[in-house]
Length: 358
Image 1 (cartoon, rainbow, N blue to C red):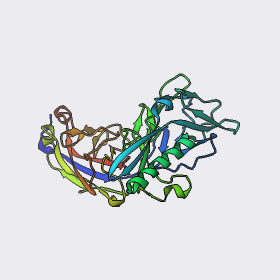
Image 2 (cartoon, one colour; image 1 turned 90 degrees about the horizontal axis):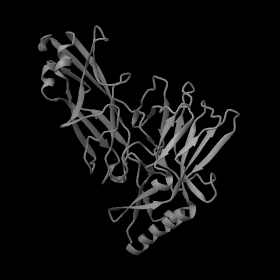
Image 3 (cartoon, one colour; image 1 turned 180 degrees about the horizontal axis):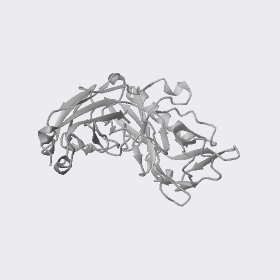
Image 4 (cartoon, one colour; image 1 turned 90 degrees about the vertical axis):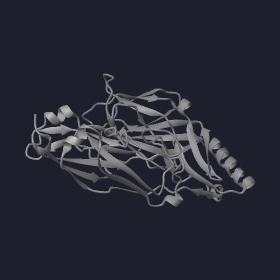
């Protein structure tokens, strides 16, 4: 057992907005906005590219499973009228494109299907996912909302498109592969749109960037801006003189600040902005001994009385969001881990990344 006052730690906090892929893994990159310009994939349907799957050729992929199916998930269109949020539901389908080993590009339109088996998949080229809706249904929706404007004489603001459908990636032996996405690296189903909660600004919703129809439909509409975030820790370097206090309760480290630079032009009334915390290169948080990095001390992060999940979506700020949002970050260690720790100075680096929010 080592004396608590002889165990010192140096905590280094950094903020970043990109995740470095260090190991063999399949990566899914979701689009930040829906443009509704995909009109030639399926007759009488329009939609948007929502994400791209980049495969690792060393991990052979056989198929994906889809749940819920698009016939059950539907597509939600969120808009604001007289400062109230409304949602209209449209029927939709999932359109998938991939390349075969002979160079041919294949497209599949999926509505009720719960899985897609790849045929001679070329894993060196990306797989693209589109959310499509019926063109006439989409036009009817636009006209309906436009008529609301004519009757009420109140400008509308389109906010986002949502869909709850998600996929799981399987090997030829039906083993579930982890997928790295904006919700972290997980074997859990990966949403085609974002990565978590549904709602006007949840992870399973994306900003509407371009309506993709003739401008006369949109003369009375104000498209909500995609928010511009500035995230930072109040102190980038924190020194903990006596880590022993962290065994009793979480000890404050610093504040995490999130500023929405264009707040007035975005819709944040019902949203929760999610972030994820992780330590690059490690599966959990831990201090590393400066003289012997193999000697490590595990710890957990906390916001108020809630433990921060490692490398997964987490919302430190309650809705509604403000232009400037603050959350106090704390740290805690277990007594048994501290007792087993080697004396000396320790360091750690934490990365925080914004992964969702409209």
